[in-house]
Length: 630
Ligand code: FEO
Ligand code: CA
Ligand code: CA
Image (tube, rainbow, N blue to C red):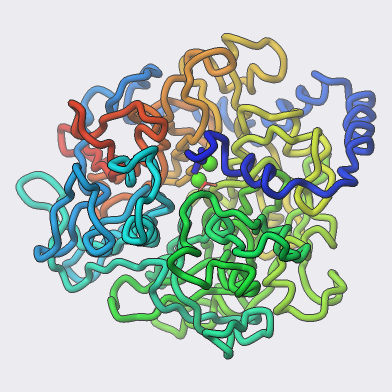
């Protein structure tokens, strides 16, 4: 997710405006720490040491001269179109507002639908997704992260909701869409009326599971048991479990709460999670009282989780997995460790927040019991040392001094601060390499690095995996667990790529050696490996194509070779979009790619062109010769 239309600032910036950092700021200490670090290592030397670390992991590159890319790189552009390499084609599979059932209305560009039609149609702003095979069926599960208010309410004055139905329409555009898709006449398309089609919205019933279920902090007037909550929203990235369920990750859940009472005192815990007295313009509290924190101050404690959903059972109740911690979840990357335990890697996408790991108590066995695997286990947070080593710090009552595991899960950020976790440059997607015991995480950017502490007052010194002050371009971190054991305490880390612009800068803003004028990009966000071990990189960054970002064009998707470090641009999205969400059909002949918020600032008519309403959509990318695409 990138910008807030009401204010034309990013969501993080909006958070900072409505909910400023603590007064103490520790600004002097931050400056002192980063200066002394630079004094010791020297500005560019510090950067050079990262290049060296980079080459340690890439030392096999000379041996691996084989080109594993099955495409020729494409140039950056600012077109209002999808661009793919020669020999590939891209077709739209499903768009915001497409009805999932034949008795539901087709999308009406004049009204942009109603609350009722939206509840029966594909949601807005496609994000994380995965494909599931179920017998001879193919099911696609997609997050609908948020809605473009100026587009969904573009028929209203100034793009604002005119009545309660408009607000409810926006609410129903959130959540998830589960759809059956089928390959017919050479293309994939939606199967209307499939018994698997389902909309999960901010009003769908959920079960709270794990250590925090039933805790006092989760109890509300509507749910005195603290075990049943309503809905999920702002689902960003996703995960897929080895047992075939989908993980939807609740990210900027805070932006939907507001207070009807200006004088209400918000707790420091609510503030750490960015809950303010004003929402981000969605207006939900006006039609649904539980979003009013003056009346229901514990309702926000029931959001910010990973939600497990079984797409094969359309009547199943989604389960919020509190054991995995409450924060602004990006995605949830599952790995089955050699001993069978399930390890889930997760980023908390906010400036200066942390990287987490969950390790299940039980082991996964195909066909065995799986319901407790994500509700019983241990939660850890990452600490990085400048020498290329790192460690996972367990969050439990003993290490944090907090009263219970329930509180630790609900206030995972506070627990992470207590053990001294490393403040990161906005951890986005995490992806594990299927061909090697290594894991990657996109650190998208962080203009506060070395400038401001995080919301909990933790310092954000320049160094370690966050090597640049006021980081504009982002980097991709990777780590290898000690002895290939994903449950080990220690790991070794380096940076796979430091994004930058070598045509504008000659200092550390030029990026690492594997960035050049032909493949440069900014703000890596979505990451996923294909079955061949190529790393696909999606961007959610600055698409101005000028100044620091000159020559980088629209948001895009690239592929990186973990062995050689080479990166090539594969796809460029339409104007003002973000490219996010990636999956493959079982035959690996179709790659599904999400195009989120084309025209978020009013300058796109993708996909239909002319003067049509821009619509977030999923595209199917295939080879013209019908070959494999991953
Ligand atoms: Fe929804 Fe961190 O991106
Ligand atoms: Ca993202
Ligand atoms: Ca992002």
